[in-house]
Length: 350
Image (cartoon, rainbow, N blue to C red; front, side, top):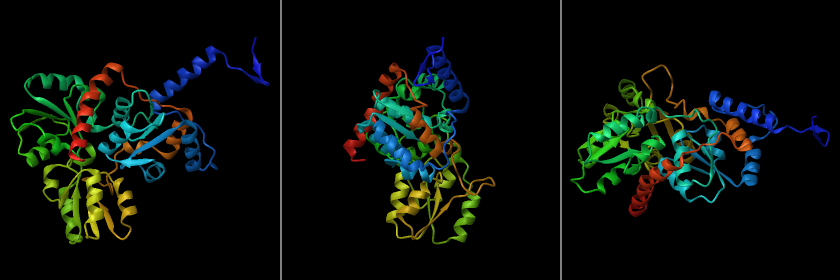
């Protein structure tokens, strides 16, 4: 016999279980739960309501689409986002970024619910360093300390001694004794830049970010000729020939600060184009040109970062799903190198 509540049919435990299984299958297939949204809804207003109702905070990376950046409680690069995740008193963290960032938030705040608008928002750099292969690589250098760039999986962080970001990589390496042997992974371009800046001989894992590797040196040269007064600024994940052309090399936050403080009025920007939204907001009187890649695209967008949309963020917060979880033993192992990074950064005032 079917049961009813206030004239509506009450779903049975069996039906609820099937609904949950269907939801999980849809998330596994698509990365998110698809649901019709009333087109008359003001998603900015609705998201604000849900944030208050669920005591949630939205953390967004600079590479997210402008609408997400504008609704976020905090916008930043990997270091800033890690610091915010560690100190927030919210019950729910909605991470508008990619999967490894949400994992990092969960590691730093294991008792909080961490949501990601689209769990298929991955990372080509993280994918370039499978933990089981890195473990074998690490075993070849038993006397080396392992520093891993935060752009990697939780499992890889668990194999590390210290985690770093592009903001603090140089300072973290320099904080160690000069005779300390170091493995640096997974980004070979960032590692090579750090080695050059510090004068250290680092053993590098051969990984890279597909977005930062695709910039065209030839097209940038022609662009600089058309804009002779423009400053060319680049992220250290770019390849060395591109970095050699740069007037300034720095983390995403570093590039933003440089653009704000430098008197130049034109900038060619070699990193994911999402940061240009913040540059234009901070400096409406300046012109920012995305560095051209070596394909026919007009700019460089990370396809993973751009999987997140305002609509997915709303549904994620509304349904408290998809949720990012990390096994307890990985949390325990990965938290130590991340905390070591945060401690060193705090000591250095970063």
